[in-house]
Length: 507
Image (cartoon, rainbow, N blue to C red; front, side, top):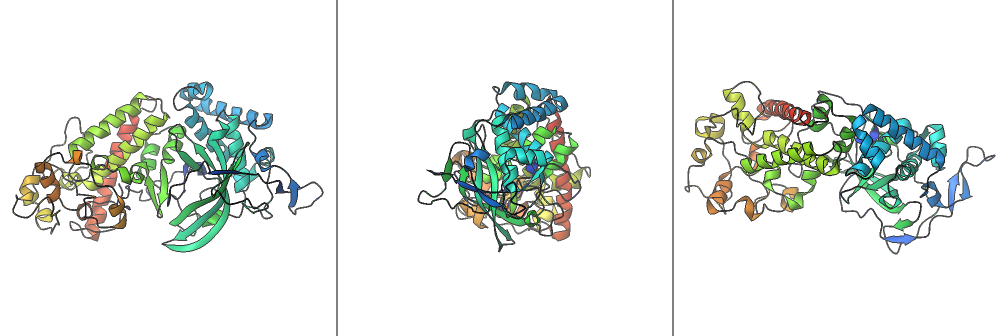
């Protein structure tokens, strides 16, 4: 439920630790838009540092074409290993069979790509080496361990061997810029994989595992690619730049990685016994922006609509949107790209309902028990009598002067009987940098003067919402805020678990 654009999804409070392969814990920073396909073809490296027979443990320049580390026709060794891993996945989850064996159905390529990535990073240990020597994918497979570039080239080769087009796979070479609380911790040369999914977008597949015992939590982690390559070409990210052979690409120390997000979505997926392939794919809908874990709905802040976040009092339309998206998820195969995308948006909105609206406040006040809302039955029915509630009647809320001024109507009386949520992203009304960058809601969100007046009378989002475990706002001091968070986390978790279990391949 997030706003660290001023929006933060409800985060796990440590109630459940879920272990998973590193690839299910993405850490890519999105500080700028990157065309991962590259912009200019350049000559490939002609020498690569290798450990040669008779050369001892010191890396030696070897005359090799860099593209040979990701051949467009992978060897029998790689192909056989990949086939075995996919068959093991089908044995564990029979419903994967048509997707893995057909490679024609919607979601086939995304599903296979996720399965292959999990297999590589689960079976091949990350081991930081000195000397900058590159291993061939077959060598990495035989040894069972490798550095960042070793696991990256093995993964890229394995994806191609599994039937993914070589033009949808790249190994990226560049640096990662590390920071903590806005302070730079320097940069590290690095290699990773980017894969172009069925939705046309590129995702980064990070070969360095998460370090749960890191002494450096909450790090910012930003990719800065210089080149990408596959078995056919090498591309530069700057048209005038020429490659620098012999560069070390394996210097990333995994201890610089902080703890990755433990979101409510991960918690709910574990409780609902969601199959690992979907957990893995769903986890990759999250990324890291400005040091904070963000999912796709919050990344799309330039196409913002309040119905996607239960903002600005748009409650009924938001529920209709959530239910429609869940139905699309239920109607699709479990790892279908469109289904997963709809699930991502629906789960985000579910969390936002409990974080952003007044439902939890009045539920606890009137019922005591924590009962998730049923949008179809409209239960439990609550009174929402703001004027009689001392917390709300005593709060000094702001308003949006362009649409509402004191004296137009008694806003506490106008809110009565309905859950409300705070206004967000109105022109000239922003309370932080990200909100100022977020597009204003479209006119269709407030189609008439009465709707605009109602929205203008609402408190600001930051005055009303409970987005994180520690904080305060105009309604709650720090102790009450923390208590509200615990209630809302529980409600969102229970609602998500129920929603996930309704898919035919989960329930």
